[in-house]
Image (cartoon, rainbow, N blue to C red):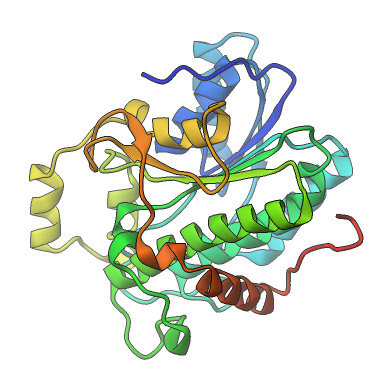
Length: 305
């Protein structure tokens, strides 16, 4: 298993840190000495996760702050709270997400839920936190994607899936969007001489409540084929599945624009993974970034940077 290097003195934000890969990432970062902010939609669940982390690592510095990525006002409040603290941010782990929502659902801002929660919310959060990130000596943004993005496309004509909604297609599009965000942020850092490292990861098939919470939203149920696949496809626990994200966030060998996942695709130790062709399209990444700025009303704070 990957051993997280010493993170003493660093501040880390982990989204979706109350369960699954987010909780495991927060636990390992706290155990390595980082001050970890559990960014969660439900503070009570965050406090439970905090208790478990502190029980495993007595003396760990862990705090809970509310963040709902499906609500841009909540994203703004969360970012403003950190900015008012004034402490440089060393690590941002964009981990939270929702998967395969059976019926088209909208966020507080009218976005399709998977696109809004998985991409537009994390985009707004990342951009608004850039001043804090760039005040740290060697900041990193690690973004969780998914192997489903390999067969996805960005449909600019129906980005919000208003005309034709498919749970799996909307999810795959949102995770390809995460890849493109990661790549464009890495390119921006290189062009502007920022010390920031932007890298991505995917967890393979990791057993978390992601595969349950999304399909059962609004009273939905996973399809028979989907349920069968969950049972027969090789899978792994969060301890192993979180490794690629932690590698992207902390390994001295991680590279800007690097993408990391399980060695055997669904399970196994971390390896360098080739991005799908669509995610290597720099023009597409720049176009999507511009569209995300338009939709969220959040753009690079030029003066602060």
